[in-house]
Image (cartoon, rainbow, N blue to C red):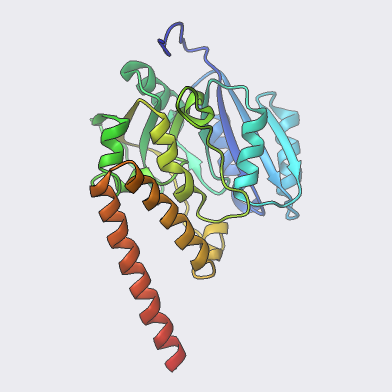
Length: 280
């Protein structure tokens, strides 16, 4: 089946933005999406029970721009917010952007063009932690089969692989199909991307990567991920073990060993750190 028959610049792209207590950063994020050069988009803002004014800002944007749709729900976490956006998404292509981050004006257009040109199912870009950023004049692109990407997991391309927000996905990657399972984010668990990123790649046929920087990732100590660091060791272990089981079961042994080595080192470090903490 040809996934690419009839694809034009009119294909709808859905961008899902989970939101919780990010008022100081939300305007920059949404404005960067509204300023995209790609012409046909819907932006789903999922307010996950915010009380800091983010919820009102979402409603204001929805009134101003018809491309924006808003969901308000009680606080259930990042996974539930992303899943809620997926439930109402209409786009043939899906992107996820965190509400405290921002994207370059050609974020969607560039990734979409790569998908079509290379007949891929996932397009991946590089990201930066600092702004302003000076773009490269010449950018390299790399096309990988799904099996090759999984064989090399946590190797050369580990910087791009686990996060979900530097990518544009063909919707079929998330919905599954013949011989593939539908993928959703695990509600009630942290380390959502560790649970799911390899499953998206498994459902794809081809992945294309570019070293062009299109995404601004804002590291924050008080973010959902940052605030949970060190507090959810058990959930992180569960996510890592689940991922290692996936690679071992499918005979990606080199990737399994790389993940296992990192897992053991992290557990040893935690043990030493805890012993030092107790001795103080």
